[in-house]
Image (cartoon, rainbow, N blue to C red; front, side):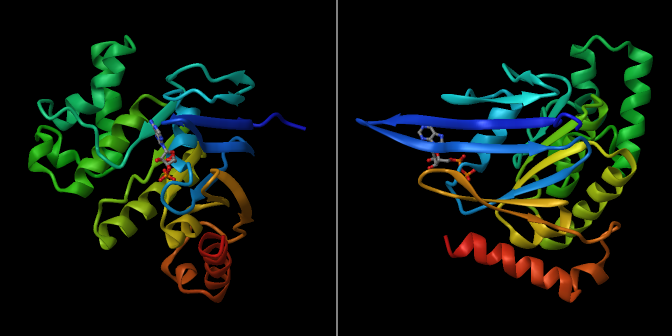
Length: 253
Ligand code: ADP
């Protein structure tokens, strides 16, 4: 048996609110294989972001542990790229400089920084905007820039928290398809948080459904639909059946 790429073991995260303990996560366990695309879906407040932050090393569990490649997560690391809904770009840096930023702090030399930034800017289709500032870009372009920045650091895991949540539906569909294109060629492990059931099913190998109070996993649904996931798949009865199943799990908790 191969070890899981990511292993979440009985993780809880309790907040003290006034005099009471509030369980944002309680007894969450989940193994994710190398190269898997897992989406996490559930109503607002069920602990999706908390779980992602624990994996990112931005938050510490109050019980249990999260392991990456068998090692406990104790903080952020270069093998985990994190993408949030808010683009988190430096407004005073151009697209190119934003994409290069993490590489500079990682000590990658100038020529290689340039080369890698070019490659990923091209991958997300922003080559004409490499010298533009974020404020001149649309929301979708900003998010493509954030994705290019995460890719440039060459993480083996992408942790994405509602990355397309602020985008219009057309842009969202385009970025979903682009993300899957890239994933099918490089097979990085992806953990993708969303509250959108369609998005969760369309992208994933496996959908993890969470519920609130306390934040926990209530169901895991395998999505045995082939890749590439085309519009035809999105409109297929198999997709509809899976979406209904996940919908039920989310809405009838
Ligand atoms: P989701 O991403 O599913 O919307 P979150 O992980 O953001 O849920 O939050 C889970 C629960 O934990 C929510 O009820 C939220 O209010 C609570 N929570 C998150 N952060 C804190 C905090 N710093 N202090 C107290 N409660 C928090």
